[in-house]
Amino acid sequence: MGVFDQLPPMDHMVSEKMCFVHLIMPAKSSRLAVTYLGELGLL
Image (tube, helix red, strand yellow):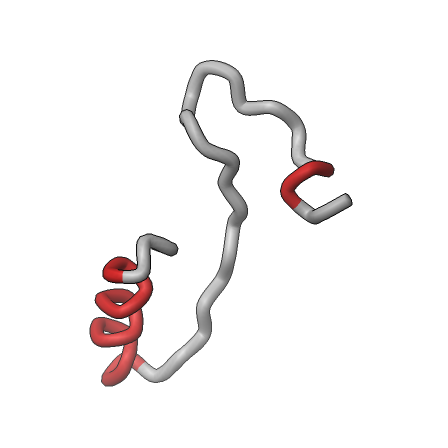
């Protein structure tokens, strides 16, 4: 059983299961990192 299977259902808000993450990184690299994660469809 994965982490996502243990989350409560989010019936009315989203169509896919979601997970909260907290990224800690230098401000200089944050824009590029978020862009890469967005291109991968992870953010």
